[in-house]
Image (cartoon, rainbow, N blue to C red; front, side, top):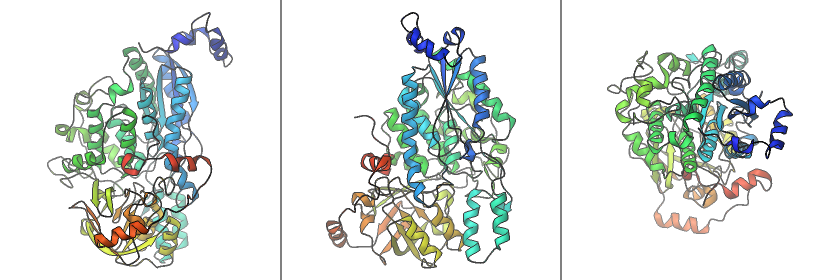
Amino acid sequence: MFWRSKDVLKRPAWSMARAFYKATGYTDYDLERPLIGIANSWNSFVPGHYNLRQVAEFVKTGVSQGGGTPLEFGVIAACDGVAQAHEGMHRILPTRDLIASSIEMVADAHQIDGLVLLGSCDKIVPGMLMAAARLDIPAIMVVGGPMLGGIEFDNRNSDGSSVMEAYGMLQEKKITEEEYYALEDGANPCCGSCSFFGTANSMCCTAEALGMSLPGSAAIPAVYAERYRIAQESGRKIMELVREGITARKIMTRSAMENAIRVGMAMGASTNLILHMLAIAYELEQEISVDLFDELSRTTPHIVKINPAATPNIIDFYNAGGVPAVMKEIASLLDLNALTVNNTTVGENIKDAVSKNREVIRPITAPFSESGGLAVLRGNLAPRTAVTKPAAIDRRIWSFTGEAIVFDSEEEAVEAVSNGIVREGHVVVIRYEGPKGGPGMREMFTVMKMLYGRGLALKTALVTDGRFSGTNNGCFVGHVSPEAAEGGSIAVVKNGDRITIDINERKLHLHVEEGELKERLQKWTAPPPKIKRGYLHLYSRLAESADKGAVIRTRY
């Protein structure tokens, strides 16, 4: 049994520690059982986390049923949707490393024996998995589940991102103010992570594919009773992992990581998947490069299409069979012997899975595309790689050449789109938004949604050293490395330069002669940091580039 708390609660030497537990009502009976930490990111800011207070109660019941003592503690969580397109978005990605570090500190300070991780959204789920990787104690991920789809808008069920798309339509007078405000009221009908397949649901599904969540749990809607039942079962399962001594690194092996990446490719996951899986691999001390994602993408058919790539949403995916059905379809590409928190193998978990809707989850023999949903590009504009998402890009613009229109911040680009300055044929370049330069690598969500709303999604492209929301579509390339703040080529692009994006050839090319490009780079000087105090200033100095997962290095 993995039972390290026993050593720091022995009488009489450790009676002082026992006395502190007893101050909050714990008894000798409680302290003679393994201590299980419940890392709960509940708050009333984030709709994806709003039900986690109730979910935690069911987890605690399961822990008690399994013979353990649950101890709950809080974890920060911020909402990407609320933080979009303003100063707050600088803070979102950096919270991931804070989350990992805070969980690590509490878990080790109290020498807990197992860990149940409660989260739902982008940055929180990967941050929690990073903590599990660092700690290497028995751990299980329990997500809060997606929200239901909203009122119908633009020929599909709406979601939170629909409101920003509608804003562009409102500016173009395609819809009325009454229609716009009705959408504000009806787009998010209940709590849960956003109903599209953005980064939140991408990471929840990835956690399941990785083996860190119970089979079938990722896509259960937040408001379904099944969500509570799976939470209680997870509480019992953590006790089984503790008794068997099955720690996080025994589950998050290299083959499990590749399984999870393939599932992400098969589903057309968010580009942020690459950023987060690189960070998790770093904490696992596994050598994984950006190139592995492209290698696996090229050999993994894209078999799932849901919003933003298609009309169906995450609830339709749940009804179609969820992650187990996807894994069953691509079973020939997976390591079926990989262990999971169910204390069974992947093969055992998916043996009875089946796709119940072939319009949502296609067979591997009839995919939407022969290659996966993400692609890694290189070229003189991205010598160390850039990332795009073919699954969300219309094939007609997989090859796009246009005239650069350059902005040194997201705000400048938003203003230009609002004022009609961005036109058909433009390649919008947004730089100094990387991990160091941003700082914090903001999402270019708003710009993309406004281009969509103005009817420019198929007529323009966007290139950035920042990143994207999983709900973006159009033609876009992010994670450009080296970033502008590191003196990458993107720092010296000029208005009017020609840029080519070629997804089939995996190319991102700036049409500037090599000699001129070299001269521009020699003349470039680094701008002063945008933020000069606090955690963001520290992050800008310590964060690695996007092609290294934008991690803060915690080992040498």
